[in-house]
Image 1 (cartoon, rainbow, N blue to C red):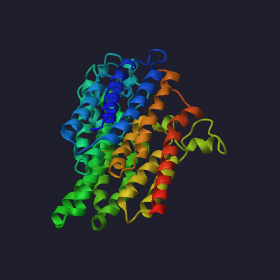
Image 2: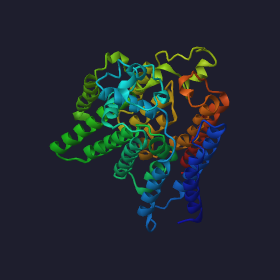
Image 3: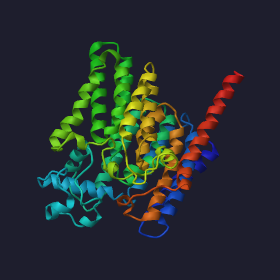
Image 4: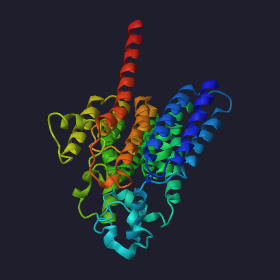
Length: 429
């Protein structure tokens, strides 16, 4: 392989390992150093994946060694404080309490937790979707976040394995070697790797459905796709934007995904969620804090002031726009899925860094590499903690233009340049 590939790959691994030096965000300037190292790691990742020769000798071994190494390097990192909320919600359920009706603070000694002060939003009942709450109950209590990290990293690696049935080794590296993916699950301990696994299984089931030639096989793959979609929605309701593209992909079996919709509703009933009106598209505390949106701030900072950082009915806008997109690409469900989910992320009134991982399996499959660049620049989001500290998520926040520019402008520039190159190739051809 090329010399510059090895330089880039070694740099990525070294810079990713260095994140362990900057993960104590109680110390001044640590988030700033973390972000600088993470973005430098991301740039090395972009070069390494671009130069990766999947047909070279021992490339399969190299692929998996790098993929697993990134997860192992992430395990010692300080987890996100949300993980203590996962444990609190699970402890409440095992104590016979409904997390949707009781807050950790009200549960008191029933939690049997060491330090309840580290639980975010401990005065509020749960806001995570039912699928996530069922998972929290199943994971045993521990003073360490390691078990959660191992579970989420395993789901992440399974997603990589299934993705290899859809794309070649070099393309899969864009997902498997992505620093944001490795950090978000094995490092920070977010549960969204479960969703990524469900999305990849959904894509694989739809691909096998198209290749099937007999009715029995088609039904099994259609049901598999419906179940995968239902599980994804039960963790993150926003993924309902994939319902219509899935139905269009299944054509004569288009009613099958409706069976999958039963999964989140059954999960909600099992969890005793007081009212389905309590569900929000992002399945967490997004409804109480605006954060890092990619688009609405342009309107709100110019023509439509939003002084109290309200969410308005942006969820309805997301559903309407995604539905229109699905029908625009009615003959190309793959593109419909990518654009529908992409629109949901762009129009989201809150965009945590790990939300960007949702689209990466689709973006990898469709070779929409602009999203991978966003997965690098989105690390600037963590500068938020440099401004407000560990309890940043408890406070209202409005991003400064320079921070938004760090995240958005490199991606816009890259997309424009790629579009220009494609146009020139067409004209010359």
